[in-house]
Length: 402
Image 1 (cartoon, rainbow, N blue to C red):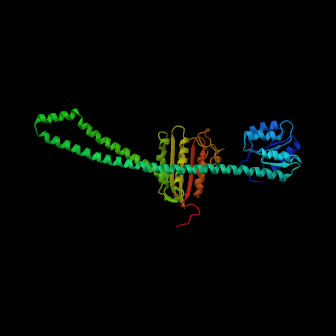
Image 2 (cartoon, rainbow, N blue to C red; image 1 turned 90 degrees about the horizontal axis):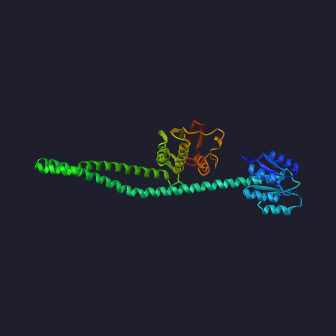
Image 3 (cartoon, rainbow, N blue to C red; image 1 turned 180 degrees about the vertical axis):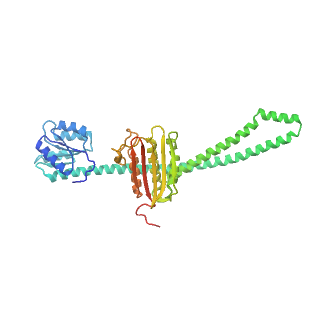
């Protein structure tokens, strides 16, 4: 039996019961399930219902013949692999079917090997096409990450300069305000001993223009602005930390830094809804691709946030293990039903509505963890939340000690 994985049933369309029965026996022997149809009309109905990846159809049938069935199937789904069955000496019909993009043809009378090889070739074409599609999406995602990393690093660099000017000017302004305050204090002290009418007029002018309040408020405004600039500086620092455009370079990196910077980057997605509890252990730095590690953290943390409908808790643990470090991310969200938990790392698998998710987030996580020689496990219960447990070795496999 060949490795057919999660392959859909094969639709067999033939008006001869004995042919359908023989094809069914061969397919069963090869590990496939068959859906039979006695004519072209019934076959097209079943095609819409079952959505098979492979169809086997006779060319000569009453009503809709095989070439018409082939044409209609290709119009509905051009990627369907259609194998046509022709009679002896009907090579012209077989050529016509191939020109109409049939996958293959077999001639009556055919045996086990001819049908088995034709189905195997069709199956391999489907697997190659799916692999190419996955690779293309992942390459596009990698390009997007690299571009975003370069953009983030560029933005961070551009923002850092004006932040430096503003921070420096606020520091200078605060010193000036302190000196002005000192001048007012000395003026008060001097004018108290002068003519009382002058001192009273001086106090009146100060009250009229709210000088004491303004000076006091300026100090508060400068302090608040300084705090705001510091927050912007930290965000820019986290943006640079998160972007790590050196994705092709293995670097020593502490995942605790990644946790903190990623949380700051996605804070708008989780604030006011999710309480984040961090238990970051004293862990060693590991040799890794930092941008990829941060992508893992972002995907898992956003997944946790999106699993929480109203309010909930996200818990993050990091800890040392033999030969590496452990990471555990838990949430109190809706959980994952047991019947689909084995599929969540599959490419393009998603439970979200159309347009809300690509189905690649956890698949990318799985691939990154695997690239680093790590492992990822998931435990979940519907209605009670989910926990992802990851392990990263101190260095990826096949990396020599320096």
